[in-house]
Length: 258
Image (cartoon, rainbow, N blue to C red; front, side, top):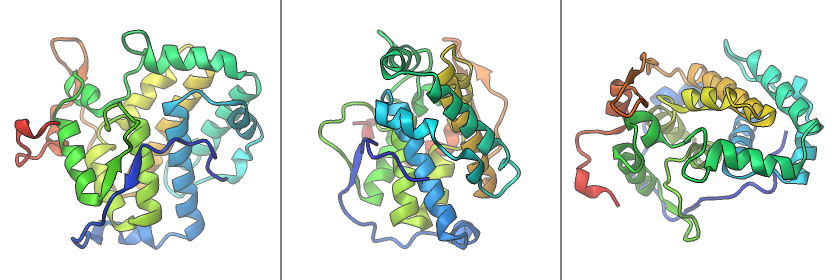
């Protein structure tokens, strides 16, 4: 599997992190084969592409012809990944780019908001542009990532986080475990599960793939973050208080928000 050529890049490497990463938790991960690491990066790029824009004809053809049986990762969730890819491939075979543009807009954009709002702040606090975004921006700055000038969406979009994970796997592998735990593990699966419940067969398959892959990542990375039962806030959105604490360290001041 290779990454789609039309994947948008929200970030560019704008510097280097002078601090040596804590690689203890990542030792077993880094020892995996280069092929597995390349596959993980490709899957992150694929998810990023599918979550950020409707697929064009080239990507639809790529997915329709995907050899899903040859793609798997180690771990308890490995069998779910080929099934999820098979579902996405089947959905691609019966889809066209014009219909998927409408489905993408309805599912992930909307006039006010899409059926699914794929931002960490939304899932962890019930609002956009909140403290999870502040913590993320601090980590991105530390890692040397700069947002492209033509990108206007907040950086805590799940597609953007998938792009960062792919770049970390390729360029700074010692940082990937910590980044995943802090910014993806506590809400990414839940977001994808919501997408898997949409009416669009294609985007339901995208959600199923994201849910299966992020679950495999959580297990394979040795993630110790529990998925706590969510509670309801006043606006009716699910909020996991413990998860908010994971991505909003006390050292981050409210006035640091940009």
